Image (cartoon, rainbow, N blue to C red; front, top):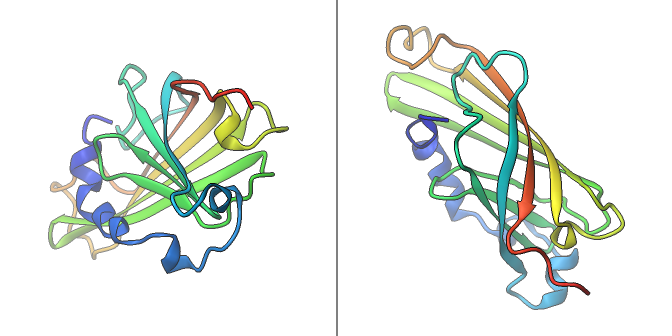
Length: 181
């Protein structure tokens, strides 16, 4: 993750202009608490383990990671703190015991080299009898893929040979823990 800010900052900035009204969301637990929804909830990563080979050199098992989660109706967003990486779903339901959040952005910082950066996080609730915001911990699998979408312009310009992929498993712990209902 040593280059996470550099490789995703430009493309992910486009996601910042979207909110739940852009997606037509009308339900879910976030709507119950008023128009503000739930969050941000801080989640701290631990037990980060690279699965197989990370050919993108994207992940680090020793880097401290904190995520901020917001829930607004059926929209759930998870942002890697201090970066522009925002993964989201517009189909969250409070009864979900697993939630998939994704982000797909283009990086054209080294134009004409254009790279598609795809991230997907499978969030598994450790207590599926409660909603995600009431869970203390989540089991996570995070997949990251980088692929050139320009025409053979990235050789020697991009950080690694493309296409590349990496995967980690980790635990997210809500900090502070959720209040008892």
